[in-house]
Structures are given as structure tokens and as C-alpha cells.
Image 1 (cartoon, rainbow, N blue to C red):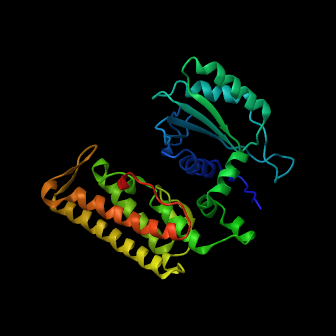
Image 2 (image 1 turned 30 degrees about the vertical axis):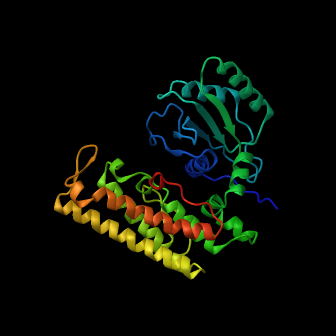
Image 3 (image 1 turned 135 degrees about the vertical axis):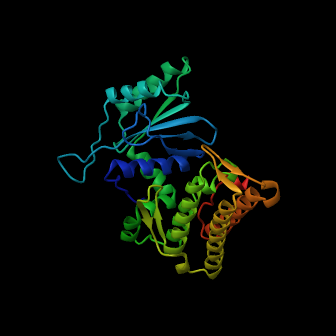
Length: 309
């Protein structure tokens, strides 16, 4: 039986869900573009898909219809589509793909309009336009259990499809889905951000509580020591030890003056002697491998990271 998933109640949660869905559906790397109050040229999420195509997403969260609190507004107007497309065409860098993500349902009028737009735009070398309706979201949520455990734990419990081990591991996978575990250390440009990311990850591993970059609660499960498989528990305990070692090492190197925070980058002094970047890169790879072992054992998709290449 295919479960039905309601759309998020707020536009902030819908935007976060869209970002995570883009990473799974398109591959590549996606993140929020700008912040509230800044000019965004109609772009909420920006990144590159698995084919290295420059892709941007505009999120359209529709409120509940007045007639029924259970009914979702099903319309998105053609003039709204045209307005967002016009803004996206002015975005720099030039886009390959522009996606409008909405909680509205599929509509043939909108689909036909977007098809006509793409036909006329192809010869002009303009970005391809797509629309993700709520049916598209539901299909991807059902396909990817990690989205279900992060956003729809209560739904899974209601239909007796909840698995505690998968919930814990899904949360830890998301805890590692951040730049601090996705790029080689010489790419890092802010030591304070790196240490905070390590600290937030430690919290997820020790308490089962996951926060976003601003410290807002995102999701929670059980601590990893609640996993049923002893080998999984041991591996994740080792990962926690390595996390603390990384944090201690970076703090020590800052005190010794071997890691210097410049305006826009980090300088590693005596890197050839102390092997700072090599140690930090290899340590994070160890953590990812330990978590991937548990994910694989529980039939969950493994973490993909540039550190593993």
C-alpha cells in the first residue's frame, strides 16, 4: 500500500523538504540560496545536479483551501509561472534547468503551458522549465525511506511501518550531510563553522537530536546506543570517538598557531610536517565508512561524499 503524505504546514519546512528531495532525485549538491529579505531573483534553492547542470528551484507553498482544512489548494496560475521564469532567466550564472516546486496538484493546463514554453525556449538556449507538484513529492517520499523518517515519523507509526534502527541511521546520515563531511579540508574557509559542524554532529550521535545550521531542531530519533545490532553500535561508538579526536586536534592546532583563520580562507602552517589536512580528511573518511557499514546492513542508501573519491 502506498502511503499518502501531507505537505508541510509552513513554507520553511517545504523549502527544506524540497532541498533534500532535490539531492536524492537529481543527485549533485543543493543548498538554500540567500536568506530571508535578500534579493533572490526568484530562486530558493541552487546547485548542480549529477550531470553538473546548473539548476535552481523556486518553492511555491500553497495554503489550505478555505472549504476544507484537509484540502490543498490545487491551483498555480500561468501568470505566476511566467513571472518566475522571467526572473530565473536573469539569474547569474546562467541556468541549465529551472524547477518550480509546489504543494499544488498536477494540472494539465499548467503542464501544457510549460511544454509549450520549453519548445519555444529550446532554440534560444534558455534553461529548461520543470514543475514538481505534490504528487511528484509523494512519489519520491515513498521511494526514499530517509525522507519518511526525517519528515513523516508519525505517519509511519500510524501505519505500523516504523523501524527504530532505520530511523536512527537515517538521522545520522543526515547529520553527516553537510560541507564539513562533503569536501576535502583544504576547501574549508572558516574554522569556527567547521568546529560547530563537528559539535552539532557529535550531538546527533550522542543524543539522536538533529539541528539545522542555525541551531533549529530538524528531527530527532533515539541515541545510536539503542540500535539492535551490536556491531552497528560499536561502529557508531568508534565514529563518536573519532569526532572528538577531530575536534581536539583542530582546537590544539589553532592554539599552536598551525591553523590560521585568514579573511576568506584557512592557512595551514607547517602542513607538510604536521599533515593537518591529511589527518582531517582521512579521519572524516573513517567516520563515513563506519556509518555506511550500518546503513548498508539495514538496506539504506549509503552516504556519498567527495571525500570518498
